[in-house]
Image (cartoon, rainbow, N blue to C red; front, side, top):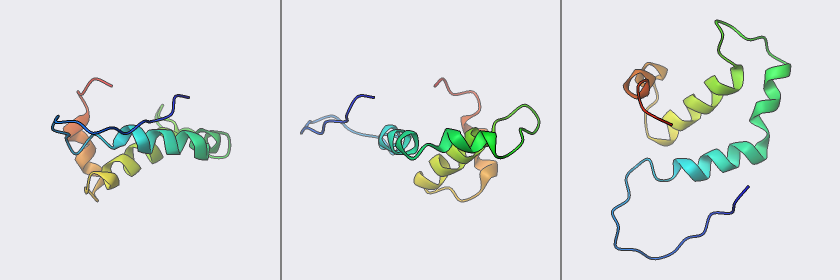
Length: 75
């Protein structure tokens, strides 16, 4: 896993910029390991639900229904 390096820049960052760091933190925390303890429902892994909800919380959205705004986004 590559380390994140910070440097000064004149580029404008969006509110989504920090999600890559959050993703690395979730990888280090081993969120994917919860899939073996909780059953999969409707074809969606439990870890995917947890990751998406934490991403929404980091963007300041507290309702999981807000995920619909990102459904068609490319990863």
